[in-house]
Image 1 (cartoon, one colour):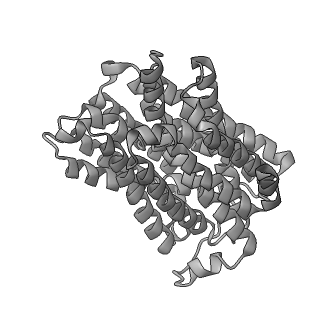
Image 2 (cartoon, helix red, strand yellow):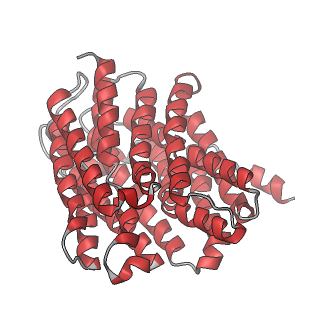
Length: 394
């Protein structure tokens, strides 16, 4: 099988595996539990996935799992276990804490899907990795949006069907990678565990810049995805707009798949840093004008949502490429996993901040807080100048 065919298969498998991410958020309002109508339950369920992912990536990175063992087999085992944990939503008479536990472990094993998928891509591409990761992260975005698409059909796809379908897709994705994608030609196996691996990674200045830029990006990304349905629902109620909240949530997230792919192509000529910087600027601008979005006409509001959804994630694959480029082949998988771990830890904080603000305040002004992420990211990668801010304030 050629490299292009393997890349297509990996992209498909990444989409299938990451479709598990937001299943809990879709399912909570339909579950037979007292917390079903609690708006804070959504942020808690997503936080459980994020916490699980954080612990998973921390252990995967600390033990150098993707560098010591075949990443394709790691992907397979992780996908099987994540699909099994996802099915925990279908337990008879579940309580909220049981659901949180299963969502936590779903996130834990997603640590062997998303960053390990990027590691597999890096093992196949010495050049053109930014383009490959653009499509790969685009698959993650589409997989993340997929439950919203199913939910847009109403109770034709209730939480039972959505859970079964996404679990099957994750299982299929794991099997495709595990049995159809061999280890890449640029893979260098790490022979032994190194206690100082984390410290060594952050000694490289370019690695630190890329990592810090990614951290700023992550402050905004998952909080935007988590509360996009809330924003659309609030707009619909205030303006009596009659929008299909689930469908437009899908479009607002899924458009990021196209922007990631486009960013990958642009990175070939522009370079990853310029693509990431442009993405941060646009998404930061969207954060700043978000208080006015609730007053936009419906058409302009939807354009705004699509623009923000495209910009908020287009920088992700380019940060991953810069991170991978500034590590050794022996530690590349653990570097990507470690940075993911820290980034998702940051996302939990921003999600909880937005989830615990008074609802009236959060809809109008809460998204302004997300602008801190793009500003920090631009500063760290060298694209943000304080002189520009001073000129604006004059």
